[in-house]
Image (cartoon, rainbow, N blue to C red; front, side):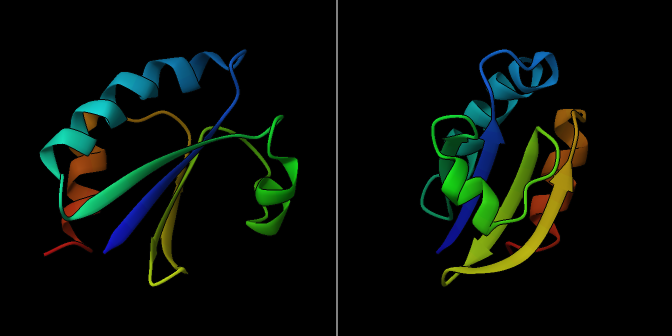
Length: 88
């Protein structure tokens, strides 16, 4: 199964914009993609492990290996097309 990791911070404006979009996508892709949210301030070790340099950053993994990533806020259709290109 794919896992989509949303690296964010509570104070991050673009992160707040993306949060409801990813919640919607989590429902749409239920059973195909598991959504995981990681607060970079509370989990700095995990953020460091993935080399997160800016937020929001979205990392798509499969079998615990990174498949792809996107950085920054983007429209839902862009995110959906990105996910569709990997999850078929």
